[in-house]
Image (cartoon, rainbow, N blue to C red; front, side, top):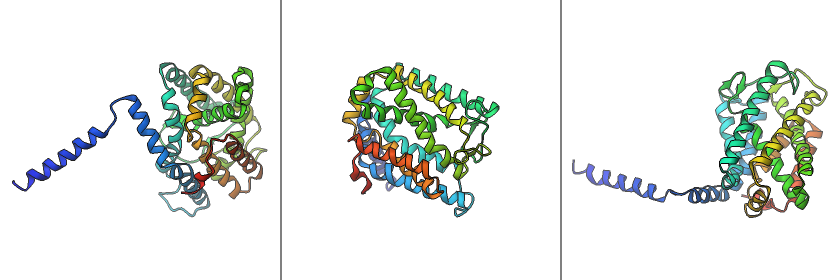
Length: 292
């Protein structure tokens, strides 16, 4: 019994010390998350999407054996890690109003995808070809994790590139909507190529042109919702002080740009390259991020 006492006490002391280091205020949590992302930028924004591109291509080409090929929990874990810079960046801007409007956007995401799966409107007839985790009414439960960061990234990039012109609501709506559609020009051909989903054929690298008309609709809804969720000036202030806020878009360029290059989707690959150049043009993307 005497041997157990010091060990138990020591373990309890370590647990207590760990709890003491945990933040107990919102500001402390935000600072902790910022620090974790900042210290691991290369791993999150470069290494994870590079490994993701290799494993997805390997799964599609039959190089990755079962049960690891397209393993849904591996895919979701990787996506969540790559989303972490965006989450950390937006966290200080999140209040009740923002949470409410984001909940509206999440609801729209499930609704429009559910209608699309059943009717083929507005994206065209498509179906999921691999397991993307738990499903809700034929739609992946994790769908908002895939869709909402995409439109938020487009929103942030346009705020930076437009500068003062982003204060005009119509300019912002047109620019961000066009950027969202351009991101899908990269995403959908790559996703079809690796076998995430299929449209049964289409004029644009296996994707029907009607899909992009559907994305115009969803992009407009998303931009209007984000405008009501966040104060534009506050978002710009956060962007000015948070150097990693668009790292998730860096991951997007590496992951889907790389996949499109592998499968010979030249136009989507060039659009991904254009996004990479746009990120460099914002003066918020540290080119040194490409080195560990």
